[in-house]
Length: 192
Length: 135
Image (cartoon, rainbow over all chains, first blue to last red; front, side):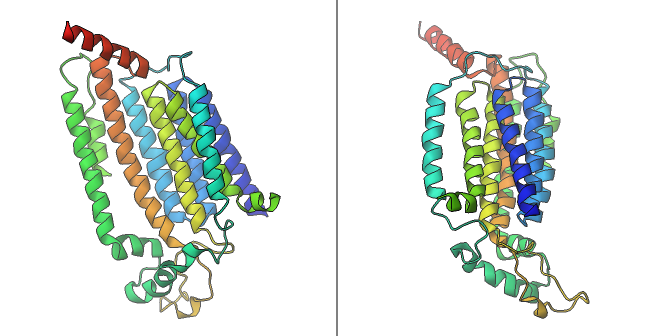
């Protein structure tokens, strides 16, 4: 029951922050609030037993991507221009999509149900065999680096491509405007 | 019905957060705010996947050995949450930051070319450029 109460508090914070982001027009406030949103979702991941994901979300989602946004803001205006946001059509789209998603979500097994189909495919094999075969206690690490090592290699290629893309795009941006184009934040992207 | 709402409450919240993110992406004209909305949407998808992997009464999927470092044979009665969604989301978080970086560099490039990051101003500017190019 206590865990449920903590979950509800965290989720309430997340909803409140999301609504505040929706109504805010100051970009710095929006960016910092999205960092807070990521951090609270990291706490939520701990409650849902995903400790590795929580670490990554806190470091990468709340830390690194907030820094990226703030670095980019050095060359961008700090205020969103008001009174011209679309409201009616997006609201209609969101209500329809949300209703469809809710309809779909209700057909899922209840939260935490041990007999759900997802828990009876390959996951039991990883949990039962990985320690005896590879002697790494953390199953998430084992699956990520060993069973699915090639997929992780593919992920690295995606990030490498993104890094090259950032470098090329920012290099093409010089010339027309006197405003300086950042070079340091692209180097940060590569190290990820 | 109420029973089902209670047992699926996490998914309902996820859908709400997702729709707030989608609304920000569609309705806002500011490109940076759009990117923030996209990352909000992304985080709620992460939350959805992690919720799917949760098992009631389970613990984090780190094998608890006997404490002497030998084989974890006596541990099969411990219930672990499903590690597979965690692996997927670890990958997704890192790729998400890569896409955010790429999006931000595009925004900077747009700012350099059009001197604005508001979508309608950029479109108006493009229209002007196009008509000037034709005449």
